[in-house]
Picture 1 (cartoon, rainbow, N blue to C red):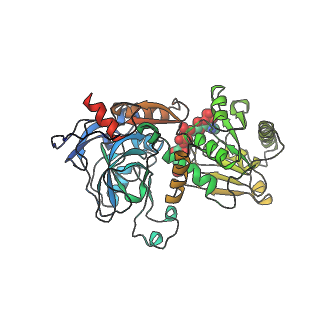
Picture 2 (cartoon, rainbow, N blue to C red):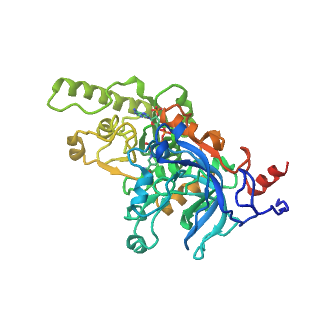
Picture 3 (cartoon, rainbow, N blue to C red):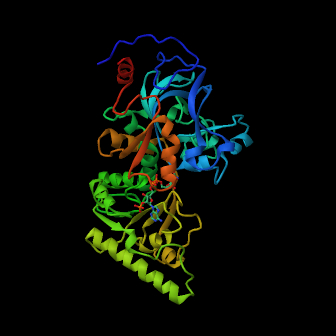
Length: 430
Ligand SMILES: NC(=O)c1ccc[n+]([C@@H]2O[C@H](COP(=O)([O-])OP(=O)(O)OC[C@H]3O[C@@H](n4cnc5c(N)ncnc54)[C@H](OP(=O)(O)O)[C@@H]3O)[C@@H](O)[C@H]2O)c1
């Protein structure tokens, strides 16, 4: 039921949770800002500051942010490694001396550029983080924009992310907010969900299909929790890898048909040189034992036809070893290190594919959003923070002390549990 809207006095800057009249854009907004002189531990790098509300181009949309999702990329942005995102943008001609991170959002369309047709002011949306120049010849030709030279990640490589009262996005990034979710749940899944969707459905013919065994590293993590559910929805048979008893039931509830505790193995890390028979032999014993644990968890002597990779350096030798002949190791990160090793003999003789994958295109983002709308994928929101907890939740992530699943930050939403802008307004009037 819609509630009558009272007019709010127009201001240049609104307090958090104060709702301007629909479509009224103030001069300034509050943001959790990173500056170069604060690069370092995330808990110290973010600070609330008033900044100007960004101007829109013809295909841009200004979203009033109700909640933001938390991802690893802004741990890197806060630390200033491996790149200084501010300097990188300045080299491209942008003038801002700060970074507003945040690559996941739920909110309300507040203003649109003059060429925007797919959304209108007042639409309740979630935002995916794939950005590209709409005039890029690659994009104009209708090719996958994730391969376009102009492709960047909103709220990491771009400024004006979701850790602010308003965020500037391109219109194609906006998708309908699943009505059954709270603002914070809706902000939690898109980046990891769409990334996992492309990894599992984007690399034909190696796609997750009914009856296919899939190995999912970090099954209780952000990416892993999405991967398990996407596999379940496709009828595939995901086996999760975790560290810790407490994560086993969690993964099973998300669709894992079996779970392996990686702490039972110690062959991790870079592959020993093949000519060093002793240490290579020891590694092989560990990798074979892990392969056997996969069969036991699956309940059948079958290898994974897809290995869902992101830890990188410590796990890639094992991933490429256990992958089925003609199967695919698909990788989107190197959380434990980038200098991965593998025994190429297994790759070429068994004709396996090692496939890099990065975020998702519009169709793939819509693919995961439809699964969420249909109730087949849960956002796995585990903890919600206030706006002033932006540094804290990124620090937990950096220290690998964050809870299973995904985290979110309330931006303009005054409390957890609200699902519409009307409910936010009603809460303000209490
Ligand atoms: N390219 C892209 O588009 C893209 C998109 C999203 C995320 N990423 C990247 O992907 C990585 C994971 O993101 P996330 O959101 O899933 O993070 P997350 O929630 O922290 O989950 C990562 C999981 O990795 C597992 N892990 C940690 N150390 C490990 C090790 N030494 N060996 C095996 N597993 C280990 C942990 O599970 P256990 O300890 O239980 O095993 C953890 O749950 C990050 O580096 C992120 O930046 C990339």
